[in-house]
Length: 374
Ligand SMILES: Nc1ncnc2c1ncn2[C@@H]1O[C@H](COP(=O)(O)OP(=O)(O)O)[C@@H](O)[C@H]1O
Ligand SMILES: [Mg+2]
Image 1 (cartoon, protein in one colour):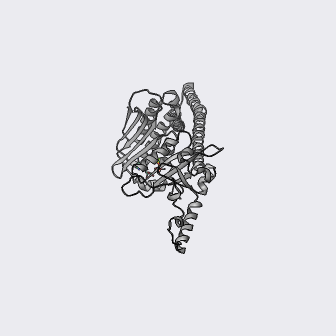
Image 2 (cartoon, rainbow, N blue to C red; image 1 turned 180 degrees about the vertical axis):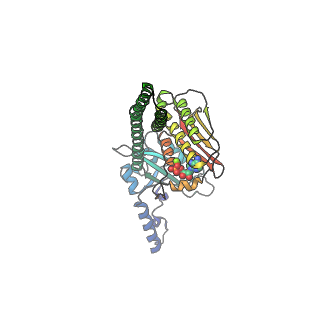
Image 3 (cartoon, rainbow, N blue to C red; image 1 turned 90 degrees about the vertical axis):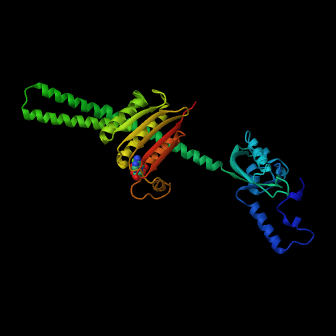
């Protein structure tokens, strides 16, 4: 490849006449924009041999420019990443105007760097699909990836810590408050059995017994909501069924409960917790916002996914309006809505997707799909 393809020194190709001052100034500006661009910029010939590389490219690969010139660009891709570079070159050769991909490049004496690469075909000669040269912009996204990974890890730890704390409070409620209420109930019976009581005393004892029963039910509901111990003991299906039946009674909304796929299948604990939490938050929202006449809850699995669905025939809502309020960084107006956001985060943490279909006046369907390892 001769220096004739060199794109950056306009004066070399300006012909025998001296280049005009304007053209020269433009060329210098262009040269500087290329040279000092924050992203790596390279120019290769159509088969990927490097013709030109700017400062950032030299810094990324950490070889002198003279060493880079004439070498194939894919040579600097990390093990296993080379073929995507060649595929890109092939695509442009086949007429594609541009291509973009994630990859890794090697920095001398350092680990591989994550990059985002964009390639654009230069002018094509008349009658040829092959571009005269390829312009590359390669952005080092290693630090960005790292901070993303850290954020995800912190989020995961936070959620785990939150689950642990809930489990602890739930256990305390069950073992402490729950046991005391049982003792209270037994004590009351002992008083009743101890001897003849006036009718008024009986009526009072009945009332106290009623209060204790109600309190025990509330403590049980609270403990279940905090951490469905039943998830560990009974398994997902029975625990969810129990929750749904209780919810339906309390909310006074008839609710269907169905299993998708094979019955009695167990999933990893974190998957079961997420499915349960989606049903919980989904039903809480139905009770709070939907004014539904009927609800259907489904949990189970398909070939690839564990699935939870909560469907209501209520008011529905403007998803876009809510999504706007949930945008990160935007000051929330009024109360902060964390339900849907929380569901999304939990689902995302196990690599799943949360889909919400809703039409004002026609009801809402929440579908969580969590990938299962084969
Ligand atoms: N099943 C539903 N039916 C109608 N509106 C809903 C439903 N689920 C959510 N919404 C709407 O979406 C908003 C956001 O829900 P969410 O994030 O759970 O926050 P919150 O329940 O605390 O308001 C709710 O305020 C409500 O307007
Ligand atoms: Mg909510």
